[in-house]
Length: 370
Image 1 (cartoon, rainbow, N blue to C red):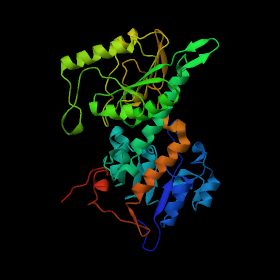
Image 2: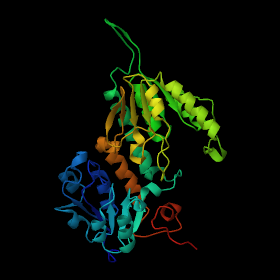
Image 3: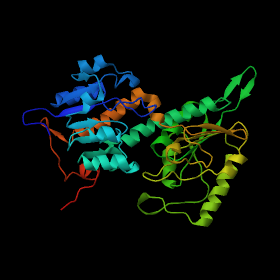
Image 4: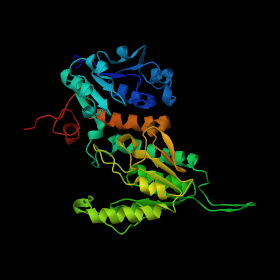
């Protein structure tokens, strides 16, 4: 930690993951960190992918440095989108605070480096989903961008218009679009498809999502099988219920033009909802965009990072869609990160209140209580 009387040193390096264009700190949040007493260093070009210039960071009070080592070495707090490589983590000094989408248990070397260097890691995907945490919820903010972009990808791949058009060559009927999953990404996808003029349906195993889907102008697809459980959570379907649900969904897909899959379970592989047999029953020219590709996909035929043609049905598994909207995705992400970092910054110094559930439940490895 910084010596008494000195501000907390915050470091931000360029993201190195392939295709990653987002940045964890914008000039706006940089200015707020400086106002809070922090000394900010950022690697040159860190914001370029999100159209944020080095000069903008300088004007916000940051010191723009030549390389990642200059930005991170000696930092008290490191902000990131994707986790730094294990080699970079090993170069951080002991006790450095690391904030970002870290997934420490997804990579053994990364987790070992965090533990060995005694880093205070805050993987923001572990943040409790509470009302107070909404302003820090990076999963929701990035899912909103991903859901929006998924529909634009679908519209580009589809060999038809989304809206109804009346032309001199006749009337074009609107595309029928089904959104699978009514979380943040799914609801944004429903809203976007509706804005493009499509006939939109939303499907979710939780019947309480009906109101949200209908409020956005979509129709709730009721397959006659309810997974309503206690406390607002879905219960496990019986084998017979699941078989009936799959049969009805397969029949329904025969009349659908575009499917956007968004169903995800945090920390677990994506549920398989659309089988190869269902895809085989869809009409040629149909499109499936599987937003869950990063965790295995909701469709059996999804190939992460690829777009494939399956007997006339296009199945696309785009990765890191939020990064394709890097400007607004970065603005939202950086505000989320700043709001979380503000829990640690008190009078220009780092202070950890482990009685705060947002800190205690997000930190990794978990800390003993009592």
